[in-house]
Image 1 (cartoon, helix red, strand yellow):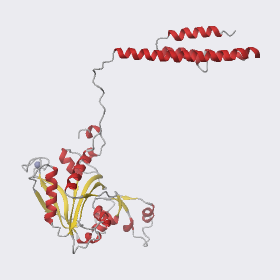
Image 2 (tube, rainbow, N blue to C red):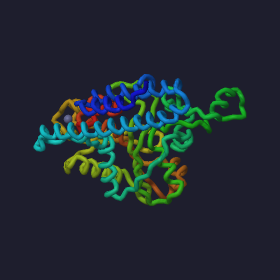
Image 3 (cartoon, protein in one colour):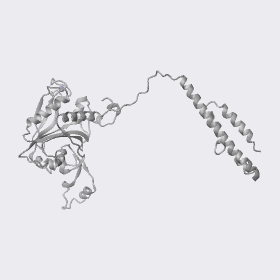
Image 4 (tube, rainbow, N blue to C red):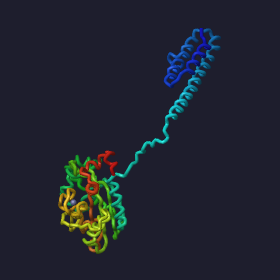
Length: 358
Ligand SMILES: [Zn+2]
């Protein structure tokens, strides 16, 4: 015997008397579960009934199902409203809100932005150059001899492309000159000296900041990826004094210190003649000696020099008419000194606890 009325009444009573969402879920399952709910059980009994009964009771069961579903839904929203009201009783509107996390620029980006801003004010144009370049722009055009150790795979990351891969595997074939075609991750931003001059004529003042890559074992002061800022000027009558004056002005603005002193030491770089390393007076101890300057009173700051005539030629500039200077800053080391960071690997760790300090 199928007693729809009883089921109708029972379900209504049970649903109306539940006090929580969990209880409601149990009741809902009892009546409406697909496998063994009371409604499904009724539907199963249908098949034993005569056809006429089926026609009459079938729709009634469907109606019952719909009725229970509506009751459940109504009770669910009632319970939700009650829960909301209950929680509002205890809601303290005077409590401070949850803090929203804010991002900041990475210390290297902050430093780069400031450096770029200073050079812009000094009349320099900023140029972005590619990180993957070829051996010509990275070495040959910058007057680096074919047998220079920096070209070795111990120092430079070469990029596998189908061409160089096949060349590597046919290295006995004399038709190919591997040296001319290899792609690499640039080892310095000096590639900009040649690249940027392809569509420019002097006078130019250019900086080119960016990432560079070297095949190195990493430790507290060496990373395989780091940042440089390249700068160069080409014009008539450019002299060493222009180079020194520019570097001095840059650091005076960077460190808000009018009295920064410079020390120039001769150094060899293939792409400059003469080449020099420039040190600035220690901004932390005023040359009295401290741990940052290792008690020397000086901080290494830039590799630089007058652009080699051969490189000027490669820029498409006549070295008999024009001259120029170039310099490169190691940004990471400057950032480390500036903020007192003692391990370069922290800069690339992606550790928010570290980055949030800046
Ligand atoms: Zn010092």
